Amino acid sequence: MRKNQRAKKISLFLAVIVCGLILFAVTGEKSSAANQGWVGQILNPVHGYLLRVTDTLADVFSGILNSENLKKENEKLLIQNQTLKSILSGYVEIKAENETLREALKIKSRQNFDFLLADVISRSPLNFSQSFTINQGTSGEVKAGQAVIWAGQVLVGEVRDVASDSSEIRAASDGEFRAAVFVGESRTEAVFKGNGLEPAQLDLVPAKVNISVGDRIITSGLDKKFPRGLYLGEVKRVKNLEGKVFQEVEVGLPFHWNELEEVLIIR
Amino acid sequence: MRKILPVIFIFILALLQITVVPKLAIFGVKPNLILVGLSILLFTGNFLTLVFSAALGGLVYDASDYFWGLNTVVFILTFLIFWLLGKKYVASHHFLSLLSFSILGTAIFNFLYTSLSYLLFHYNFFDYFLSWRQLLEMAINGALTFVFGGLFLLGTNIKKEHAAKF
Image (tube, each protein chain N blue to C red):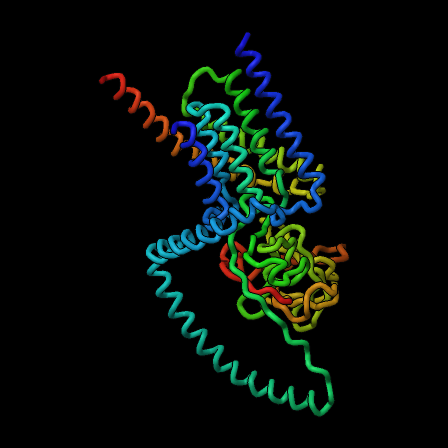
């Protein structure tokens, strides 16, 4: 009898907790975890430290296990680096010529970006969302919607939610991520769409347009969300079905958000 | 001390989940370490300690996820379902029971998470819930529980035998 009463009390206690949490989750002004006040303030340094330690350990072990592959990859990258250096010298010439022409034609130069460096302090734990948290927030003038890049001008995501000392970044592969893009040299307009764990896709690519595997995808800036010219990836697979108005295009992303340890925010 | 150890264990698992585990994903699919941890401790831990562990683990997940409070709620609910099912239907504390809890628990957790995130925040995660990747997640969680749960129960049995001898 007493045991039964105790069980009832515990059930009631848990029911109150669960209902309270649901109510809190629903009525909270912001749904994101980045806005959790004291919890975030306690956990963020722990996350950051642990992430650095575990990443270092993971890198050491993968280095030991893949030493043979790393050697081959290094040789391949050295050759690739030399090739790219030779191509770059050509681009330097073109850039100088471009600047001279801009000056002569009095064309306004493009806006220079102002970057903010941030460390990744945690990654989303479940398979549903593709996001990570960084250690910069409103104190670093981070705002929701800003573009997050890495390695030159590769767009890796956007700021989803901001707290005082941390922000949550929605990765480009997340199901809710969208960007207006240009595809290939023909600069075909399309909409880039993250697709969760499945490969990202391009929407609204007319069936008549010629798109080939390997075409580069850059942001067009037409959505007034991201600046023009940020690299998103390249076309991985094209499926043009007869009778359909649009083609199905799969996109290969240059980075997986899990691999990122630092990112730059365009302010 | 016996009551604190599960809490520390789950807390460490939660920290690992938000840091190193995403790097070890198989076909992009990550295991759910807290679920694995709760399955392993199901027959040995104290009820309230385990509920507290589930809530703490959920809180750590919430710190790195989209919705504040959702993981905590879903972990508590999943654990309660685990506990009630275990009390009613599982007669022996065999490690195969742990395995079935882990596999079934993954489906229950994902179902609750998907449904609540849709109902409360209008986020649609049903694509993942209905994909083959969820089956892979169930398999990974099951495999982890099989290995570590088996080892844990083996250790506990050896300890009991040792205590009985002396």
